[in-house]
Image 1 (cartoon, rainbow, N blue to C red):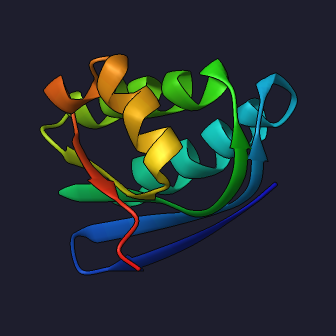
Image 2: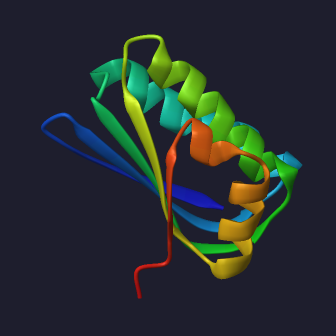
Image 3: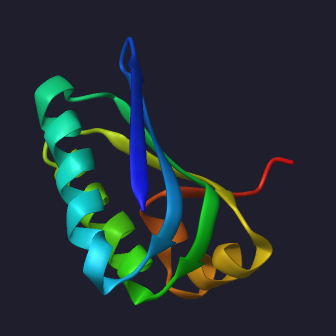
Length: 105
């Protein structure tokens, strides 16, 4: 799993690549949180386009980033979800705390 973080003005995008499971979720959280706390973006977008596997750790990842952003009023967008991941995110109720979007391609 890798994370590429791109920040421009008050918007930050975290591009995830690979699998999100219990073992690598901590690394992802740390990378995103460090970048968010350093620049406090108005919007954080987490891009799932290259995620090949996700267990419940993916839901926890999104929920935790929402908590971090909500401390200072930031907004969260979860984008490029495969149809399966989109359904999981909707069923978990994450659309109440974040904007969730299906894969754009």
